[in-house]
Length: 152
Image (cartoon, rainbow, N blue to C red):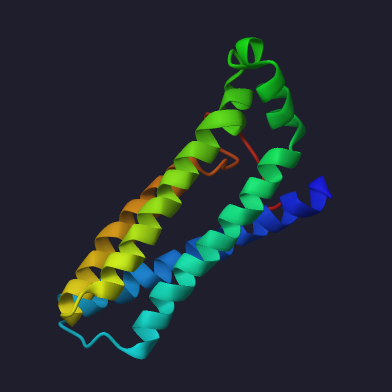
């Protein structure tokens, strides 16, 4: 089960990133070119947040199934000395949760704006902040904190 959840979590990362890129592009285009906030823009906003929430749920399931995390939680004093254990036991989960909170707040705030340009601006700012955090904390193959392949 752990391997299946890992595969799903690893694959969903790409869907989250693609959805965020599309949302940020649509928000920037709408804001800078004074476009109307269409139903497609609203669906993009909504589905990006939904995909991120699904990824969060899969990530939380993976967190409590991971042998690395189980070891980290049981042996915190010694495990915190290992950057990889600290990364997966604490850093990755906390920072990704923060990114999803930013994305959720941005989605909710954009939804409540009455002016189209403000919707785009809000979405652009919050989604870009979440995107930057996510890009920084994903365990890329070249990451100094923890290396993982692009697909697992």
